[in-house]
Every structure is written in C-alpha cells, then in structure tokens.
Image (cartoon, rainbow, N blue to C red):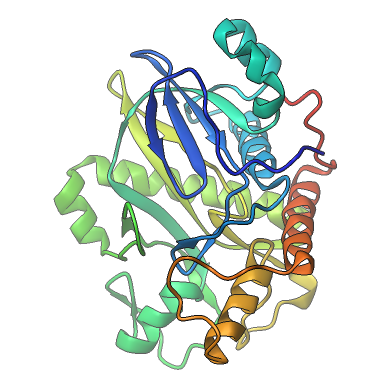
Length: 306
C-alpha cells in the first residue's frame, strides 16, 4: 500500500485541480490524470486524505476499461512504469504516480453527466418525493426509497464545477447536445447493463452510476472514471432492502459522521471541514478496497498496475 497523497506537483502544465483529480497537460493529444486521496463530502474537500482511495479509483477504472471491448475510451496506460517510459521527465515522480496516474487521450467533453439509475435513491429519490417524477418523467405512485425501477433509466445531469450537479430531462439533454444525446443514452445504458451483470456476479447491486463522454476525431469516446465507488452506488445484494438507505461501498462512513455533527450543531456544513477520526478514515479505506476486490476478484496491488 502507498502513503496517502493529498496534492501533486509535476513538471507539466496544470489544466485543473478537481475535488479528487489533478489533471496535467502533456501535449495537444494527451493529458495525465492523477487521482489523489482527497475526499469531499457535502461539497467540502476535507484536509485528511483517505489512503489508497486514488489508487482504487484509477485501477478500478483501468480494470473496467480493460473489460470494455466495443466502446472506444480515453486510457492509454495506467501503469506508472509505462507512463514514465513515455514521459521521461516524470521519472523522479514514479512512486507518487504508481497506481494513481492515467495517461489519457484528450477529447472535447460533452457537458452532461450521463447518469443511469436502476434504483430510486439519492437525488433521484428526492426528485420523486417532490414531483413524482425522475428526470422529468413520471414514475408509479407509492414507490419506496431504494426501490427497483421498472427498468434502468437514463437520467442526465448538468456538470457543475462546484456544488451539486442538477438533474435535467432527456429532452433538455437533446436540446443542449443535439442528435448525439441519443447516442450517449444508448452507450450509457449498454455500459450500465454490462456493469450490472459484473456487479451481480460479485454479490453487489449497481444502483446507479454516471459516465462521461467526449468527442475525438469525430468519434464519441468514454472518458473519466468508470463505475468506481465515487461515481457509482454499489450495495451488497444480501443486505438490500427497499424502504431503507442501504450502505454503499464508498465514503458513506464519512457522510454519516458529518451528518451526525451537523445534527448535533457541531459543524455548519461549510469549509473548512472538521477533523475526521482515524476509525472513520480506516472504514472508508476498507470500503474502497473491498469494492475493488469484489468487482475484480483480486486485492488491489499497485506494484505492477496495468
């Protein structure tokens, strides 16, 4: 396992520092995406990192992309040694990059989060309570929280640089993107069904996830992270119950802890966030590692990541 990393500083131009990822410009054709161990909740990035989180996000994405044969994607390599061989100036940073860096093809990003939901949870549940609809489309009355939808639904959202994304309708997506919106919907549902089958075999439910796509040389390609605990809601099949909020394999221990502080009036929900106890950090690391192991069938090893 590696030491946690909260920030990176590489000899490359910085394109952006996101909540979790630092993105660097390699050249006109390539970028380097480095997933740190930063963690955020309630739109606040906390000071304490979660060990191995970045490696799980990168290597699980790399694993999924290795399974997806019929949809082009952005990954060139997630192997630090191979990346350094292609970019020799990064040789002194090999250990910091190991497991968490992905050399990727550049693309023009479509400004929509391609969310697919098979269960009524999260913001979809909130929308349903308020309107009886999901992404502008009606659902049966009387549904419970976390209930299975009649079928997986494409429920897109706007991409927000900060704060929460906003759910939008499929019609709004078409108005924003044109004909390519239908292709993004079809690809998203295809990927979701594949991911659901893999999750089912691992004893997990893929309740919902989000994909991102970009355009490169006139072709739509899959970009960003793919079916990770940060971009997806995974539940254990054997403990799932409709009408509850099933625990997910992500930063749920952190959200629970912070919500308790808010309920007790000990944190106002604004930055800077409070100090997080060691047991909460450990619980998050364990959840990320367990999600990786369940899905891939192997424990995370970043010594020879591929």
